[in-house]
Amino acid sequence: MQIPTLAKIIEVTHKALSARIDEHDLKAWTAHVARKLASLCPVGCLPYGHLFREDDRREYLCDQVWGIERPDDWEHYEGLAFAMECEWDGGVDAFLEDFVKVLDVAAERRLFIGNLHTKTAWPDRQTTVLETVRQIAKGHRFFGEADEVAVFLCEKGGDGDVECWLVRGNGDKPVLVPDKRA
Image (tube, rainbow, N blue to C red):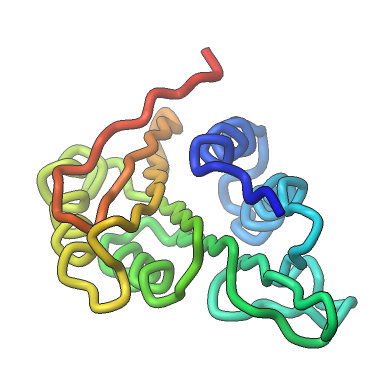
């Protein structure tokens, strides 16, 4: 089974976040991003999340996870290949509260997407939000030094800027990932 690289997941997420969807329809945003990412789910994995509840694969732990199937037991899985969580509220507290969810799960690839309000959180995102995210990741019991998570910051209520940062468990400063769509 070939799990997509974090770089591929980032590329697809950048494209998904450039869609024109009503900024107030938060469920539509999560569904849109989840649909695009589920298209990357490899053979041998099953996506779980609100898009798959008719197939009895409801949201589990995060907004979307991919369970690695057991060939001899389709009802159970042997781990998670991917975990994604979205937080569209715009406040820093809600952002950080949901960010921890992707650290709590043991998944081979992790992605977090969150809105930050233009006037309050966006201007200081590098010195406040990203620094706090770095500290949380570094000290998290289930997020090791070699682990990494892609963190998308979306400006809420402004020009709609989007940035992707790579956060590593070793405590290094987060790295801005270039948007390769341009």
